[in-house]
Length: 381
Image (cartoon, rainbow, N blue to C red; front, side, top):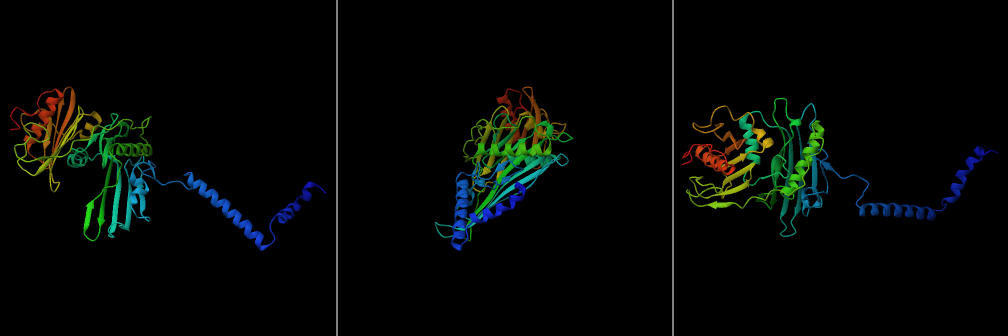
């Protein structure tokens, strides 16, 4: 008989190798369970569990990496907390997108037995700056040029703090009408304990530098999806600029604000914060010391790509007669753009509509940069 004809005998040999009694089958099944369990436990211990970790924001962030909001720390004492993500990626045809990571937990406090609930979010937006001056100033200045923001490291055009940031993308991502595309990131959230206590509690981004890393990673993945990524991805390799100083209380209407001589607010019970003071960026914010109400936001922007977000909205006339450059002073914001030491520099004001406030700030910044005053002498008196 040929080898081909003898092949059916193999199943018989297999049957003789298998257990025939109930006890034998139980022993075999138990052995298989132990082997599989041992393999699974070993894989888990090596942190290579067979299923992949979740990724968020177009693949930019991985579960369990980096800051607390991506790890189990985000859930506190809640073993059943949830982290969910939703996103819309930019494309070549529609270069706008957004993504959001939401953390929710609900548990009983081991300290006092109160019911604790948290609702935290990290939101990223990808898209061009708005067309109108009002919307653009509200988005950029109000959101990302406050006294608690610092420049992104490594010359990246943008700002960051421990709660978010803004990055202006390369010119390859500009719109057809010339508007820059930006990526913004913001952390938000609330913490509630018991029936009546709720406080602002944004998601933990891990500090300003970690926030910069998160922002740049999201920007790289967004640009890749939109088809405008540079040859080399953007990266964060240096420390961030020294964090801004602490908020300082202002006790009198004649006190200088943000260390700028002659910059006074005719009010009390406020506090100021001086942010970055560099050749490319200077910021100052004044808030109510009890309610946090904004009284004054000031910024000087000279970094070319960051300043480009304000292109086309400064008008063609001087903001005030006798001032250098062009600009407008509106109901909620003011903008002035002038040449300063060979570079176009943008001066911004929000919350206040008093041109003397902007004059004092712009002249102080201009003197620091080594150029002529923006407003004539005595304008800030």
